[in-house]
Length: 385
Image (cartoon, rainbow, N blue to C red; front, side, top):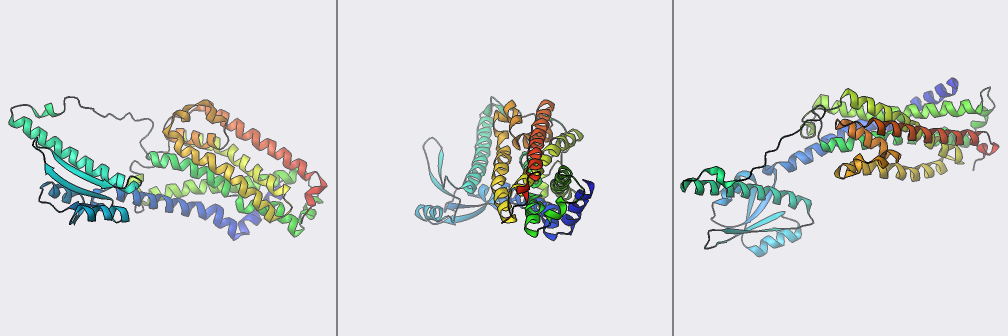
């Protein structure tokens, strides 16, 4: 088994495509992902980077808007609406006449389907709300009433820190997804050549007649593929740590509190990741063994990737529901791994869920390995097209 393992590892390290896909790809993609999303989200959150269109008016409120936004004045309402329809403006404000009660109506035109418009509109609403509060406080003070009467009920927000301070919800939801995805895709390139590729090159026969049992051949190939999958997943973590240490542009917004990876989170991640890697490696190896050539193996693996991506992607949204704390999640392969990593990063490790996840992934890996061994013990394993 050791000889087969070392042989596969040597071939893996010699293959430029495998090195790029499994080792450097995750690091580069993680850096690109964090820097890209950080820059975009950081830019959107700053009102100074947002442009609003305003109907020409002498209202002093426009001065307040000019301090917060880039203001572009429009001649009439029809022109403003047309800008919204064409997508050339996110929000158009039209100041109306002041009513007898002293209230000023401002019509805000926007496209409800445009997310950017929703963000700008919420920022405008916040500024107007602040202006209203200040005006009310001044009125109360001039009437001899305390300014606090403007807010008879005040909601005081008090954060409860769970675990160590670290990355925000965005990173916490995305990091488990990326770790799991790279554990699968890291072995993608090698898996097609591992058995199906050897059938095409007619080198599998030589391996089968060597003084090594077929079970040892399967285990050697399995551990080599599992090592590659694990290395790929770890590479994504290395990329994440590099982003934090190098303080690259755009990362400060997403990593304000650092990585937030506690020793407990690291232990949980390792515990659930190892059997998941074994499950992925056994799955990839079974398809490569069953296929008659590399192209057929690639077709099977491509279809299987959807089964991995869907639950992994769902793990990003599960935090918005109560499902993250429900027991059934721990019985769903892939989703259970991502969810347990997510909970650990949030400082809420579920040890029972971790144990169930390890058991489920381990059993699936063992079952698939039994299938691969049986395929290797059949003469049809040499069939190729």
